[in-house]
Image (cartoon, rainbow, N blue to C red):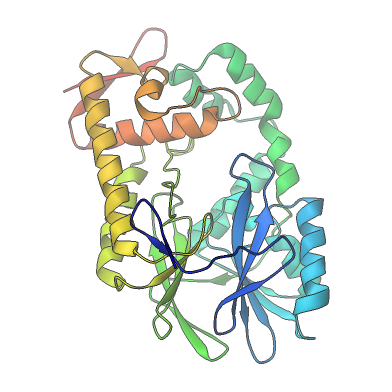
Length: 345
């Protein structure tokens, strides 16, 4: 077992190659698919039952990922069908091939209600030009018009990465117990990275499929979306982290969506809480003078902001600023130029 510099322990020496499986627990298999983005992979999970399989998350809707799934289906299913597809949340690296898989196998799609309905809205929205309110959200953040023009031109490119969803699904709720083969998995709903994100906890094996909520080396993106500009997802994320510390044993094996499976969940949860609180304090100090969203980027991010990361950067910056506005540590004022500026209360 390897121990990382952050104190976490990693029990597996190898990672599955694309199209391969590694068993991480009885009937629990790790699949690793490529992603055409800077975060270049996603971990997916296959749960074997006596008469079929449950898939947890799907990968993006690319031809490469479809081909890898077909390879897995031809070599690893032991002549058993895929019965259900569980999607932890609506982001396209998790949801992208859900519709394709459900149609291919006649499987049941399982999601939380908010994630399913939000997915339907987003998939429909990105078929056309961005709503004016979406453009206005980024303009109020102080994003340059040249970047906004490129954003508008690229807006519906994301539709290539998701297959159409079925018109019906099975709703998953917090504390619901799923019988999958001989194992019972408890649904844990968390918030922040996505509105109603699902984790799956097998108490008997002391294993949790964590989605993007708990990653070993990076914190998940916590963003405000243009359709809910005053939301406070960072508050929700930190609350969920505290809740998980109470709900999970210290020695639970975490199966994350990015990075390697690990032990040390309480340490990782506290590290993420501490990182966010330090970032909030640095941001508050920087806002001794009025600052636009774009002006706080250097405080929050090490990399240069461009069209490739602008949406995430704005969403995450607004999430931090909204947290401080909600706690009455910052106030916000809209200038004559339409740009929102934040300063200490």
